[in-house]
Image 1: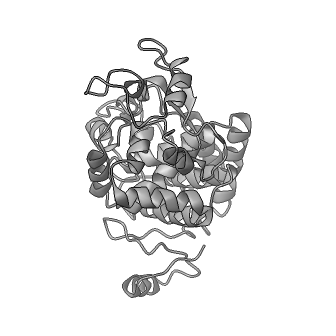
Image 2 (image 1 turned 60 degrees about the horizontal axis):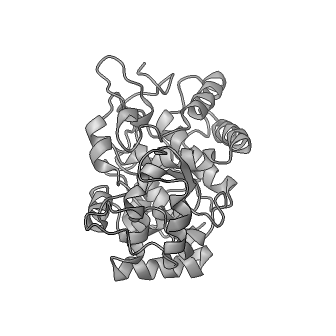
Length: 334
């Protein structure tokens, strides 16, 4: 997939003299330095190994594709794309896995462990956990029929985690539209990125507790959500009662739940977005409404923008060069 490059960035690339490099035209918040051929000499089989392990995991459990894609998202929105979401609590580390957005829902950590283990055998302490997340997100998208893109690489792993950052920075299902826009903007992502990246909800699941307030009198005005199709709401209430069943899972896109396509946007147009944070894209802003319509009608346009926005998100404040470390085990510091 071709992208336009800014003149200044092309000069930057030429100065680095990186042969055959394929860069995003987005620079990271700390000056960039990521490029897709980063492991070409140090670990030439790296991408092949990641793809192989992800393929096996998704073949075993279709839901894993969405879980791995979500891990990259939840990593990048906290301290940048630095693998901090993977750290377990130990010593001075308080794990982000305990945060509200991650507790009882973030998953795929065992798959990341398997990828890291295979990479450590092939080329010890060379491929970062942060890069594993970026590659696994791309491979998961492709496996479910979505677009591919060249993943800029060269991230290093953080030596810290931020529980408060995870609680405060990751958009929540019941956030207002403006809060969601603000959280994206804080990461250097705009409204176009918001609508495109939300399209990842064309695959995966959400828990009853994530949208219950839309089904019952918990919306703040004493009324069920009138932006939710009522026949759809009746169907949802069967397995998402007023109390209990918090962990019951529902497809984010009940039309084609394991296929990366445009049905997510079509669902929003039919008032069948599962999460409030999805449905507001079609009810709270003319700009986002227009984008939803465009992506619903034009899969190629959606795929192109999704790939572009994923590269942009993957460039949020990465640690590069001598910053951070390359963890031997993604769950703990060296």
